[in-house]
Length: 290
Image 1 (cartoon, one colour):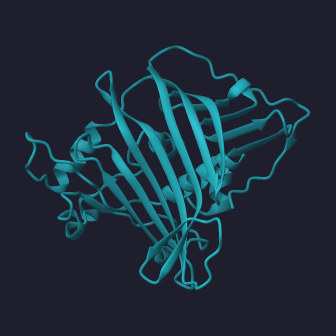
Image 2 (spheres, rainbow, N blue to C red):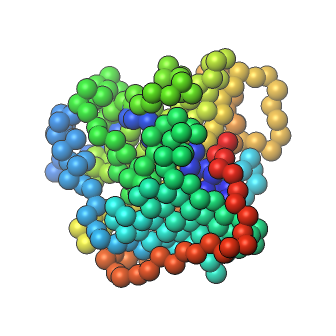
Image 3 (cartoon, one colour):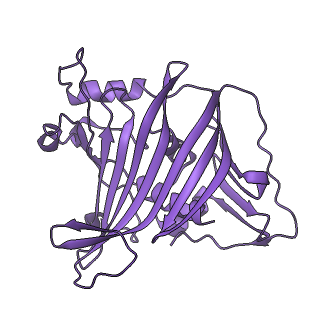
């Protein structure tokens, strides 16, 4: 359940809308800077067009220095369903266009929630497309020319687009949110999502979702490694033991959570089933991503 909870936190935040960076590597044949409209066009063309996707996946969780590793299988039917099953099917997750399902055979519990119910609880718009896009290193929202950050895009030969949050909920303070896209200028997939959420004391949590080691399959590009970090930055004097600290001006940052995903043996357009049945004697658990 811990992996599902951390992943949902990122999904919920990214359901808001874009703001920040996009790093770029130049090649001998590509030294010309593209304008925002050209970048957006190339990002659109880079989107995957498969019918089905399946892969073995290694999941490593780091919660305040305590690590656990899992093996699982993931299957995606494009624009319809995402299925995740741990070894021996002990834990399974099924995400459809309107709902999210989860069960655990060891704990004999399950979760079942519609996206509309999640929206009502959290005050943000969450969709199946958001989750699928995050797994494929693709934009979760439309990128606009007006979001292009010209000041930062001149540094390190990068393209940068900023985020602005989309929500009508009183639960969300738009002034306390900052985010960014970092786009790979070689293949025009997303290199990194970055989200900063401040509190009333100007401390903040920094979420970073980064993609590595892109591979080409059937003329489509996929990330083979995804890393998610949540770091809490506070103005503080006391340094605790057994934590990872990152200095940032007058802040000390504590790495709170980390998720590493590694995809292996990716296969496209095969036929498969998405077996998922919740036993009748399992206990329903409350939806909670805090």
